[in-house]
Length: 437
Image (cartoon, rainbow, N blue to C red; front, side):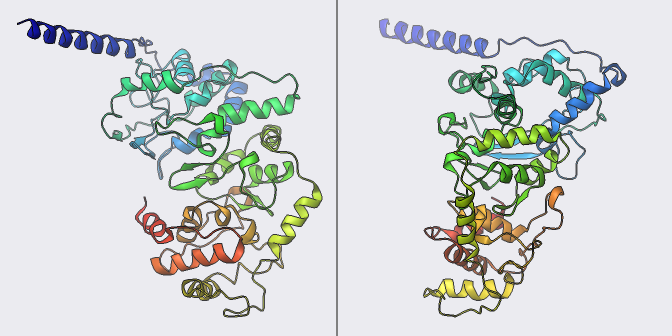
């Protein structure tokens, strides 16, 4: 009987502890719903500022599904824990945020809490947005509340147990969420601080360009050491960059403005819609972001950039070159890849004789990445050029090459245009990309 009483007491303690933990994680109060504000009540200057800030934060990129209305949500965000579908942030009162006060919107941005007090999954990067200033949050709110209201309820998330239990996000926040506001560096100039504020806050660059731990939290101690997004490797920035030609301030500005730089190639995959939104914002803000990113690594000399670019261009396929020449590979798969490259790719990817040609393959991020994902994605799906570089498109080869042929081309390109180690499991990478994984 004594043992039974002990067991019952332990069970009771577990129930009390579990109940207390649940009450703790659900303690956040609901913020009262409001009547949707009249768009005319917002200052047009504030709305315009909010549009600029929304573009800098690329809000529409995540909150617009393919073929859907802007900001109506429904975009699938694949994560290691399942699929999260983005929310409707139009001012629709029933399916959007039309009944959210500015207070509720600010709390979501700063604390990752919905109007009713529910935890928001950190796929919404409030771990970065918490650094955004009050006046900027007010401007974004004004802009969103004056956009067309769209009645659309995105499908439910598809998260595996236990990740579908929202109160557990409280534990994630306890371990990983730093809600400290942005602090300007007095030793730096105004432009650098503006760039740091935008890159680390509203621009949330580290959400993609930084690695994450097993719990999906950004490993901030590793800086911009490279990450993953939507089946793509996201290149490292600063000291960790794999770029053969060092990034300069001008190159970063070119890339952010136009999605293209001669010494680095063109934006593709998840980066394309980001630079498309930068295309419409104030140049000073984009240049400030470039200035901050450039400061993460010592500015290279002009001589070093020229030498690296010249070395990369020397690897270009010569206009009179044919497969099987003196520099041909010995490996049979690579020789097949060389023949396929000559047949399918060389008309565009040969020694540059015009500024309209693609960048030298040797300088591009996909060819120098630590794995084959990006190059496979580019060859399969092509490149829809950013708005600032509309003439630089690449056709998709999805229906033109088999998996085996694609693997051979990709392996050859890596071998021919870099001195880096061969990628492993290229065939598996091709199969996953073809399947959409």
